[in-house]
Picture 1: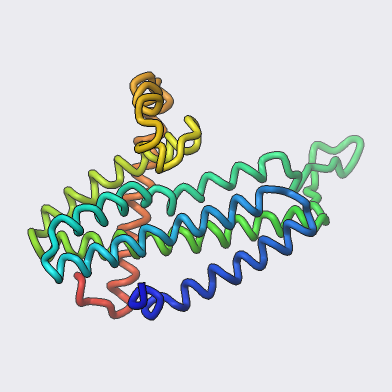
Picture 2 (picture 1 turned 135 degrees about the horizontal axis):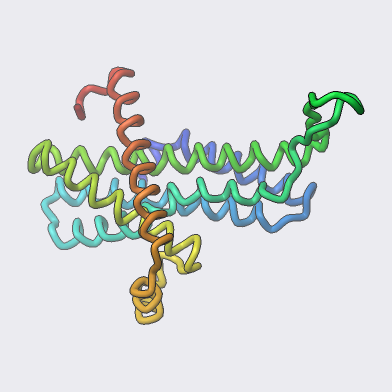
Length: 233
């Protein structure tokens, strides 16, 4: 835990700042949404902690402990990209509308909302999404690095693909079926029944989200490599 805090103290600082912003928004807007957003960014940090623990266990050659940490990472990783779906909470907010400029004119003009709380909500959700996905993709990077080192480039890309698909499934389960990561242990029968009954939309959503996860990770990896972090390339 100490090594994690030392290496990612900047990230943890931003998390605490985000919590403070959410608390201020809770007081201003009175919406439980900001409590949920705070919880979501905490869940997004956990995969990074778990993968760091897994990497330490690999170095110590503790196979059983490594498997446990990796399973926890895989179970909680979808939480880090799940936050992108929180943008649905602005669907009922009015950001702009069209105005007729003249009675006999077919042209129209755009008017923007001047309610600052509406824009602040958008920015808070956006910041939470950015924070969560960076933390999650960093953990994905560490996972791929270890697979690549131990096995091969091809193996690492296979692992990437499998994790992306499972993440798409995990986000669908969380957003639409309303299960949590821990329900795999505490409510497995109900979870399995719901998964078996998935429809065409579920498959489409999982496919689209798989592409989103894989594309986001490859972009993150490319940026990290170009910025000088070539030890993992």
